[in-house]
Image (cartoon, rainbow, N blue to C red):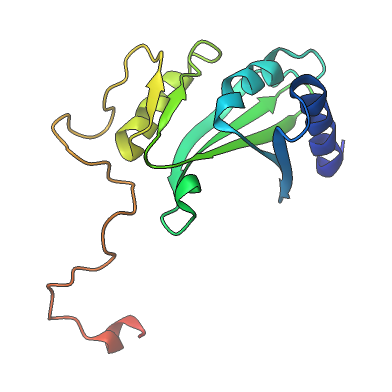
Length: 170
C-alpha cells in the first residue's frame, strides 16, 4: 500500500471509531503521521494495536521533544512510532501539550517496552506518565533539579570573552 493510501486508510478507521476531527493526517517522507489530542492518545494506540486490520503490534520508539518557539499550547510533544511486522506498515502518532500540563497516561499496559522509553522522556523532558510502574530517572543523577533536553538555556555562554566570531563563520 502506498504511504498516502495507508495514512488515509488509518485516518478513515480512526474517524469511524472516534469521530470527525480527532486526528490530522500528514505525510512525512515515508511515514503517515497522525497528530491527535492528548486525551485520545491511549485509546487510539490501543485501537491501532488491537484492530485486526491495522495490527500495529510493535512500539518501535516513543520520544519527547521540546519546541520552545512554538505556541505555548504546543511547546512539548511526544511521538509514538508503531510497526505492523506482518504488512511492514509503519505509522507515527504525535501529541502536543503545554509546559503546564506534561501529564500523560503510561503506555506500559499496552507495550511493556514503553517502560524505559517513558523513563527517558521523564528524565530528559519532565513528562509525567500516570500509571507507570517505576517512573524515576534512568540516565541522569537523581539529584538533578532540571531536565537537560529542554531548550531553556542560552546556546552560548554569554560570560565568555575569548571567542572571536571570525573563527565560527559569523
